Amino acid sequence: METAVQIILGLVLLAAGGEATVRGAVGVARKLGLSELLIGLTLVGIGTSMPEMVTSINSALAGAPGLAVGNVIGSNISNVLLVFALTVMIQPVAADPRSIRRDGAVMMLASFVFVAAAMTFGMIDRWLGLVFVAGLFSYIFIAWRTERLGGPAAELHIAEAETLTASASPQTPIVLHLLLAIGGIAMLVIGADQLVLGAITLARLAGLSETVIGLTIVAVGTSLPELVATLAAALKGRAEVAFGNIVGSNISNILAILGVTAIVTPIQIPLDIGIVDWIAFLGASLLLLMHAAAGTRTTRIEGASLLVIYVFYIALVVTRAESAAPVL
Image (cartoon, rainbow, N blue to C red; front, side):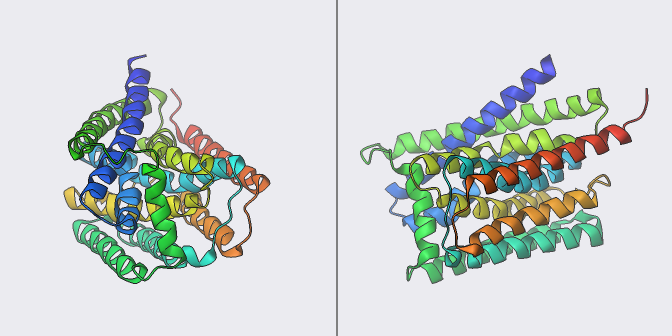
């Protein structure tokens, strides 16, 4: 019972903390005169990935690399097969292929580099973490420079920022935005601590590996900010923002979360991350880009198909874990 309370409390605090942190940071940025383009490129993508970052760092420091790596892999999978699928089922999405051509290429390149490094070295060391973080800053700088001239990609990032602040009053003092961001960070830290402790305990009690818990419960829980942001955009008639939110979050999950976590402490790749997980990790991103490249509306039936694939993947993960569990 105590373990369930820890996990639920952790997920609630992560969801609320992620939302508060992003809204507070975006509010401060707007008060300081930062452009909607720069806000969309940085604070929205990285901000909605803050629950994954804090949870992964806590997991790695707690000696649970399975949670840290499983969280990133599982979050990228659930962002597409769960978050995007649910958004499309509520509001069919049409995207301009030009709007995510560059960002999609960065997402796939980062994904392939991560998989190649994991299979070659068996870990994400500090030097690779530095490469990931440097790659993130380079991507943001190049994107900002090129998008200052406008275009569909710039419009998408601007729309991401606008969906978060459309209801915010311009008269709100900057101090309140700052307090909201600080409060959000505090909730993230406490929530991540509770979630990691509860997840480790649950894995031991259930006889499952920390990796399985990271791929499933933790990954879905830390993806809640993306789910909230994309569903809110869809309900406001801006469902196309879902593409930008998810691509930006997937990039941040690899370059920012893995990068920063590896710099803090090198991450060992768990042995129970299997070929099915890597295929799902790369395949989910490819499916998202295929829908975007088609330039046609992604229908509710297609969204439901993605959700079925996600349920099938989770079933495979759980079945594999049960077959590997020792008989007591």
